[in-house]
Length: 328
Image (cartoon, rainbow, N blue to C red; front, side, top):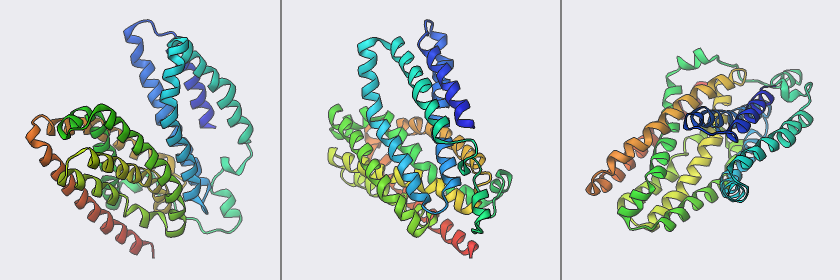
């Protein structure tokens, strides 16, 4: 079971984090925590869920995404308080203890080795259910529609990451205080949690392809508002709309790959997309930062972003329409 291996490795890295005493030790620790935690855990969880649940896939994904969003809202503050109270070495040792005493036993007990959850696809075949013919990662990489869909999917993490990391500069230029920008981030998390509950059933009812086609429309409203009326109010609107689009993207994209390319190689496909995503989040802060060097460029940055989002909305509609025709 891959999740046990990843959990065990996360336990070791957390223990190592509690013993950091030299600057060079931070590099393997931060890499390991990022890879095993935020990287591998959501990838394995969403892949296993999307592969196993064919009916109700959207609602199942919305539940695990709701938990992820809740943790993103609550854990940073909780961990800062805990590490402030007991010190960061004991804080990381406590995290390692939670992985060992709670996470790993829960996985072992809740998912038996002979559970159909460990063998996705076999239960559907046994019941005579229709299963989408699975494409390998090599076949997916030869499909031009895949790159169009990835292009649409990647704009949001690229621009949102750039916006988040440059929020102090953006707040200064639009007249928003640090507290008002922080409130916007809270609005982002809240909107994302609410959207998680709403978008999942929409995927089950209308299909991931149709929901995916609309994922950039909310953020288009947000960026357009920043372009037309740059102020703290439109910053908040942007965060709200970005939260909706972010939840829609994370839910519909995972379900989309399963719908279009099948589930046998879903992990390989999602890992490929995740590689592109990491690259986009690395480039995003630099691109947004360049657009903020000159205060006079702020309006131009928002205008360009609005145009790009509008164009990608059109790309999404065209690509999804073609995929719907291809599936008939």
